Length: 388
Ligand SMILES: *Cc1c(COP(=O)(O)O)cnc(C)c1O
Image (spheres, rainbow, N blue to C red):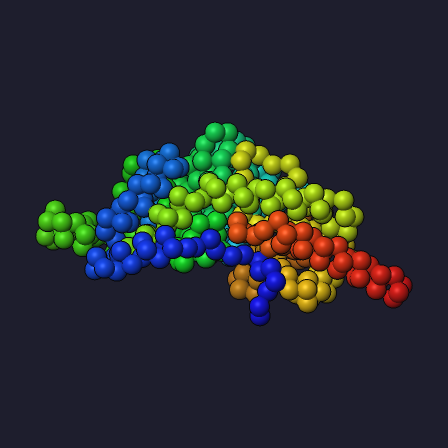
């Protein structure tokens, strides 16, 4: 399908291509000095002590939960309205993800009150997702975590560059996880980053990324070591130099691209805010978002399927963020989840519609999509009137 306006697109150019060629010509392809530089610059950007580049955002989340020492019987509270990797990565460790509800249709982030309700003697951590790049109420989450002695993991896949009370998102909890998948605010194709200020956790994270080994091929190449020990059951979650080279260029464009995303969101709001059949979450927000996606909520009674089909006919791609995790077959079967357990999440899961948002989108594209939305509403509402 060739879209007039796709859901997402990548700002990728000659600089990334040149950086990749340079790596290929160097013939050192996996974790080496380019990855070290990527980690250093990412840590500097976030003003955090340690940053470890990994193969994906999911790998980052898996390691983050693993190094907390979670096992069977432990519980970790996370939202249901997120990408499935958030909960999967908890499940990988043997622990149980306990799903919490969102705050409201205006604030799609996990509700701290819902988190409180789910805390038991088995709770070990809270995993927050900065939904759409909009910071959640981290003050309240950290306060709850402190009171109940829980770790906080930030799934910051949507939020590189976002800020909350003067701190970068991802650096407020114990560990922050980023994804550089192709539709994220910065990309390496596949890739991720784990950040922390905790030296002990950093040591473990570093080892888990590479088979629990005490030294890397790179260390041995540099002559720093000639053998290694294995002290943990680790994984191969390494990134390669090719992707780190792309990441370095992408990181340098992140602020500018997040600013452009903000301008696009403001423009969308100007066009869409007055429409009565669609509402826009995050009219109010905390701190400085990274504007990862542009979610909207269709009024009850409007068929989302028909809406998306109409938009598609006009060449506009649209999507849903997210089908709630507790409604997926795998999770429903495993935990016997029932309809109505997370009412706010379920309403949003049914009515949410995500419109295109990416930094290379032109003002004309935003106007085109907004017009397409307006026309779609008009045609669906008039059809509904004819029927009734
Ligand atoms: C993209 C995403 C992930 C997973 O990242 P990958 O790099 O695709 O593994 C995890 N959580 C959230 C909220 C995401 O959006």
